[in-house]
Length: 387
Ligand code: PLP
Image (cartoon, rainbow, N blue to C red):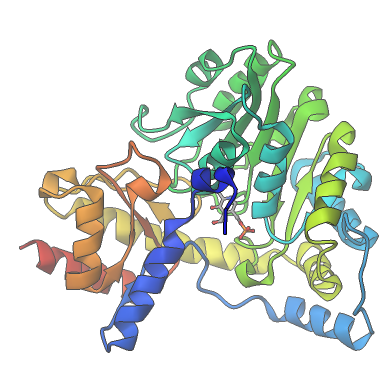
């Protein structure tokens, strides 16, 4: 078989590889604490499950509109209104099978040889993978430059040139757990006015996981950017629905037809019953989100204090999402060596920083979407491992 050349440039998400390695060790009888994969460890709230079951009982079994059922797109608009006080036309909303396809389609719309796409590095690995796949030039924003890994608008704006087609921003951030305050995002949005040829993909999948009562500095705040703004968000992280494969996106009116073509060529439409579950999540109470945030706040304290108490490990306080991204190089190991030792000797699955970008050699990512007991035990095991 002769395979397409492009495939050589397609990357992957190593968190899944680590999960597979950890599962293998578990089959061999080893006890593993999973702090690798980025998914909340709670069950989806019951009312969402019930609404989905009802939709199946009511006979929603067939194909539906490729951009999502009207009721679901309207629910997304109601949520945007209630969270951010912005009016979005449901025709600009596209329901997706998860947040990930939004990246795939957005990058495919702009990427080709000769084009440049700016993305966070370290960052969600699919950005760089997809940019490379399209043949565009990946232009990294070095997120390790700022001590707290927050967004530096001046630096980002300096990366833009006439070849830049798309700028990808992810706040709160995976893998660093960094949260960038609104004043910085305001600055970035203001600077972007000078570059009307650049589209923006704002990955806001962690918008409901921000600590210390801070508000989401959403790109929906900048109505002057709406004609080139793509927002990725969804149900996966907010409602513990990673396995449901349901996400939502908002696009400029001018891109809708092309994005719809991608949907039709690729997944046709999103599972109808699941979209009814999604409506009940958005229209239901936010009690679940508040409960999770409180729990994650307690866990953040344990992991932040615990990691910093270990000789050779330095960790900044995560401001959002559920990740800690400590520097481990002063333990005498780089991130990859450290993660490997953790898995095999301490029985703790974590992800090396290099899974998110080549520069992050000195770091590892801990997901604290696991019980307080598990986190404490993992820290204890790592402490013992380093003696
Ligand atoms: N964006 C970021 C930054 C993520 O970390 C993830 C998942 O880990 C996604 C998007 C994808 O979310 P989904 O599971 O809805 O495809």
